[in-house]
Length: 597
Ligand SMILES: *[C@@H]1O[C@H](CO)[C@@H](O)[C@H](O)[C@H]1NC(C)=O
Ligand SMILES: *[C@@H]1O[C@H](CO)[C@@H](O)[C@H](O)[C@H]1NC(C)=O
Ligand SMILES: *[C@@H]1O[C@H](CO)[C@@H](O)[C@H](O)[C@H]1NC(C)=O
Ligand SMILES: *[C@@H]1O[C@H](CO)[C@@H](O)[C@H](O)[C@H]1NC(C)=O
Ligand SMILES: *[C@@H]1O[C@H](CO)[C@@H](O)[C@H](O)[C@H]1NC(C)=O
Ligand SMILES: *[C@@H]1O[C@H](CO)[C@@H](O)[C@H](O)[C@H]1NC(C)=O
Ligand SMILES: *[C@@H]1O[C@H](CO)[C@@H](O)[C@H](O)[C@H]1NC(C)=O
Ligand SMILES: *[C@@H]1O[C@H](CO)[C@@H](O)[C@H](O)[C@H]1NC(C)=O
Ligand SMILES: *[C@@H]1O[C@H](CO)[C@@H](O)[C@H](O)[C@H]1NC(C)=O
Ligand SMILES: *[C@@H]1O[C@H](CO)[C@@H](O)[C@H](O)[C@H]1NC(C)=O
Ligand SMILES: *[C@@H]1O[C@H](CO)[C@@H](O)[C@H](O)[C@H]1NC(C)=O
Image (cartoon, rainbow, N blue to C red; front, side):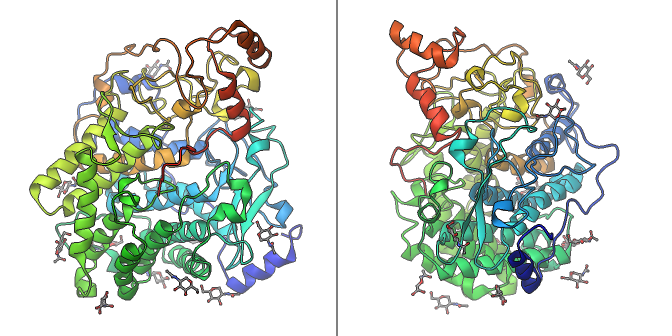
């Protein structure tokens, strides 16, 4: 600590925030380790908990362990990972080591991390019994604390939140293992002079949601028997209080500067995770805060916020997707859930029916393919723009929202329609698609072999990402990849980050869906029925942000390209795509002008 700034010490003393490290529940002995992919080709004998869903849930959590940054504990299960980026935060006089690498690179990004932690805690509030039934709860605790403990360090004072570590342009020029990460890793903050409403609210929502999960108070248990609500058993009142104090502090900070986009304060996030709005973040955080602090007045105000901000209108957020940037579709669903669960304690005085109507307007729109929502020929929910990179993410998030909402539906027909739509999307992701590929790494022999992950690839030659090494060095078990294109085609090419990259937020909805299926599904996930070897790479090449949509290039262009790429002959990458890849980051949102909030 002496090496770091006294300012940081002063703040931590003033705030009396507890520093905590790693899992508190004892981890299983022997440890859960992913079986090899061939295991997912053998149908199980069923039962509850179903062994295949159990492994899917376990692997989905294991993915996060592979993404860890900082000093790894002795309990680390991912044998090929090493300590890394131990000096993060030094430039700001702080220890910001730890936390998670966001995706296939070595950036640490607070906005999508916050979304991921919120989503994981939300799912563990609803379907937490799925973690308990499979002895995965200690790993859940471990996974959450690894993220939350870092987020605590990233919030060293009431009005300071670190929003990114490492420079995207510089970082993306590095492709290699975790031992040689370039050491220049600047840390970027929002504060009173350069605020960020969206990111502060999102972090507040994560802390609030997780404080409810960790709370030892039974007042969060549902007294409404029509709502199946089983928190995972990891309660710890001390930790819950710590999380709640950060939630409150960030909530205040977000409201003190209630209309700023954080990329206007921190241009370095413009190329990674710029936010398209703050209104959805503020309203969503208000809901979580109302529940975490048992505040019916605040809960009641959220409907006004929602209406005043125009979040419910068509063409507004209700026509959008739920993701790290767009929280709007989650608002009426969470609001209905809180209102139903707290009805007896809060004695009404709020308009639950309006929330339920908003929720069903959104979900029915998705089911019926209204507005921007449509399905591919193979059946994947697809939004032009949002789905062009990481197509599975909007679909998985919609399935997650529907699975959660279904028990609260206003009619048995609607309940059925949400449940069956959610199943269709999850089945697609797990192999019921024209490629016969379960889009989760290491689950089945047909799973992707080339996730875009510098760590897992074992390669260190940025100009030969696809071919060096020929086979990816490590299996990144449990990672959801970006997904196929709008024609259901998937190429499994390492450099093609729109289809093959992995990310913290891509996996988040799968955690919740897998936990729900552990609870309620005795039959196997779809992939055990797949014919092994059914996957074959489609002809030509993808047409996306990496690969040129032009079918063939002129000889001159091919020669020019050879200088950059080497004449691999395997892929025909457009110069433009490659330039974008090198210069704009592995993963950036679509600049298509489509509102994502
Ligand atoms: C509860 O969490 C706190 C803070 O992380 C930790 O110090 C304590 O050991 C935990 N208690 C139990 C019983 O796990
Ligand atoms: C995969 O695991 C099974 C046991 O579950 C084992 O029989 C098989 O040899 C393993 N295959 C590989 C390639 O490691
Ligand atoms: C971790 O270190 C070992 C030993 O140096 C190395 O083989 C391995 O590739 C490293 N892992 C990563 C992800 O770079
Ligand atoms: C506040 O944040 C801005 C933007 O990140 C940064 O340039 C500035 O140095 C910060 N102020 C303090 C006092 O750290
Ligand atoms: C309420 O939740 C707590 C913590 O999860 C649990 O210990 C307790 O058994 C629950 N009570 C009821 C009535 O469900
Ligand atoms: C719950 O946590 C609080 C601290 O927030 C503690 O005082 C209390 O003893 C805990 N109760 C139980 C039953 O663990
Ligand atoms: C930080 O905010 C909390 C409430 O969120 C408040 O109680 C505390 O006094 C604030 N600390 C400082 C140093 O301003
Ligand atoms: C935003 O902050 C301003 C100034 O403090 C305040 O007047 C306004 O009511 C706030 N708006 C919301 C929606 O909280
Ligand atoms: C909820 O808000 C409505 C107006 O929007 C108001 O009439 C009602 O009194 C409020 N209820 C509570 C408990 O704050
Ligand atoms: C239980 O939840 C349902 C669905 O949201 C709601 O309609 C009902 O009013 C709630 N019942 C009680 C007793 O809280
Ligand atoms: C799970 O099954 C129980 C009955 O066993 C049912 O009450 C509940 O609604 C189901 N949950 C979901 C999410 O389908």
